[in-house]
Structure formats: C-alpha cells, structure tokens
Image (cartoon, rainbow, N blue to C red):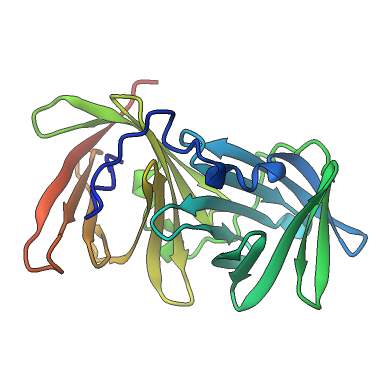
Amino acid sequence: MFRFLLFAAGLTVFAQGPCASDAFKRYDYVLGEWAVSRDGKAVGNVRYRKAVHGCVIVEDYTGPSGVSRKGLLYYEPRAARWEIVVSGTDGLLEGHETAAGVFTASGANFRLSAAGDTWSIAQDGAWKQTYTKASYPSPLASETRHCDTPEHRQFDFWLGSWEVFNPRGALAGTNHIYSAAGGCALVENWTAAGRTTGISLNFWDSARQVWRQVWVAPGGALKVEGKWDGAALRFASLISRLTFTPNKDGSVRQYWEQTNDSGRTWSVAFDGTYRRAAE
C-alpha cells in the first residue's frame, strides 16, 4: 500500500534509518520465540519479530483450544508512545503506553518487565504471565477458522500476492496479503518499488460492526475504519478516505484520498491497480 504518511508534519528524512532511535528499541527484549505461562500454568507460545525497517514488532501467538492471535506493537512518533493492536480468535485487544513499561488496554493496566533471559506481563492485582525461551510451533495446515462469518470474509478478495501499478502503468510496488489468526485478521506486507516497506493489520470489529485497518510504516501509523457497501470496501478517517474495489477481471483498485483542511477539499494520494503476481 503506497502510503508515505504525508501528514501536516511533512515527510521526514532519516539519516540512519527511519526507526533507529532508542525509543523504537524500548521493547526489543520481547523479540524472539517464547513459551508463555500464567501463574505457573502453560498457556501457549508466541513469537515477536521486527518488521518494516525496525519500526514495528509483529506478534504471532498460539494457545490451547485453537486460540491464535496476530498483533502489531509499534512506536507512534507523533504521540511519542508505543501502541498495540491484536486480533485473534478470542477477541480484540488494543491500547497504548502510559509510561515506560506500562500499558492501558481494553480497560486494564499492564506492566512489562525483563529479568535476565525472561520477561513478564502483569495485570495489576490479577495475574502475571512469564515468557521463557522456547521454539515457536509452526501453525498447522488444518487450523480451524474461528472467524468465519460472512462479514469476516468480505475482504478476502484482497488475499494473495500482487503487483501494483499506478495509472501510468508503472510498477508502484508489490503487496502480499494473507489470512492470520484463524481467519480473524488479514495482514498486508507492502514493498514499494523503492524498497520502502509497510505493514497493516485488517480485521472485522464485530462489537462495532466495522472493518478496521491499522497501517504502520516509517513515520507512524494510520488508522481507518469502514464497511463493505456491496461493491467496494470503503475506509475513512478524519484525514483519509481509502477504497478497495474488486474488479470483474480479478484485479483490485485501491484509491486513497487525503485532506489537509478538515475535509473541505480532498486530493488523490494514490490510485493503484492490483494484478496477481506470476506464480
């Protein structure tokens, strides 16, 4: 998805990589593969890895009874804080950092701390999860979908590997979109022709009855939400309008507009056509 986050602050040029400051490394101790236990009882395995030039930490979790989750943990430079969003077979979790090592998410406070080769998350007065080094299991091919309502499948036309072309026919980049967390999330991995990368987590919020997308790239995050109108999936925020339209020939059009004057006028930020990449 061709988005350089052209907000009012403008495009920042980074001399040593876009996410090289210490703020982006605050939670590097979670990186790796871990066995998870809560109050001494095993509750799953998780893997955390850096992506998008070190700008985001990607979470993959598997637990008992087919529970799986996909999440993004990222530093938002405009708000000067870390934020988290997780979509999984057991629901949604989202929140933000209130102090170093302290997050508020879904109405609760959580504290992260590291000690030697382990680290932990504790919910104040409730429980404590401990993470110890262990291999992360590969997802089973026969994984059961837990999010299989018609609404969860509305964005499946975007799944796959794509080449993306601008209106002049030039290659803008490539995009790979895959299903994750038991069908509860779609993950986008974008690579621009200039090799800049970005990632997005897309999910149906059944509580609010909307589709949501959280996009993270060098420069920060963009959050939009929307609905399928029978012909296209239309997202919007205060500054962006984003439409994905499946075409009869199997291609997909992505049309992105931005406003810098509270919606009085809109300009085209990107107009791209997705075509299936050769196998």
